[in-house]
Image (cartoon, rainbow, N blue to C red; front, side, top):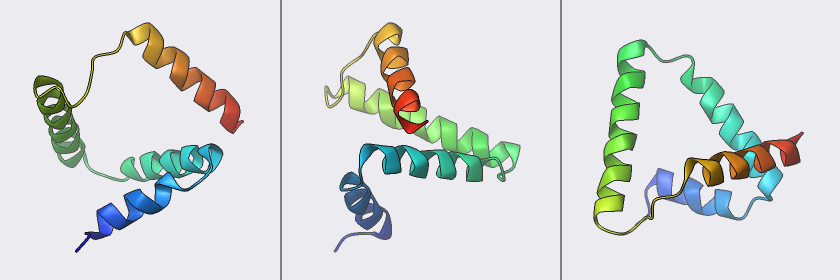
Length: 79
């Protein structure tokens, strides 16, 4: 049985790129409402998840130039 998170993730995959970007922007804005300790814990958990993915070869490293170029393109498409 899928968790609520997994259901949302599956539904979000079917959204157009601009709607996904808007959803991300909305969710990030809601993070501003969290206290500093909770934010630190969330970032630590995310960094750990990414590092474990990298170590197990489930994700590949990308250059910062590529990451920022792609992020700028997505942000331009949203506007």
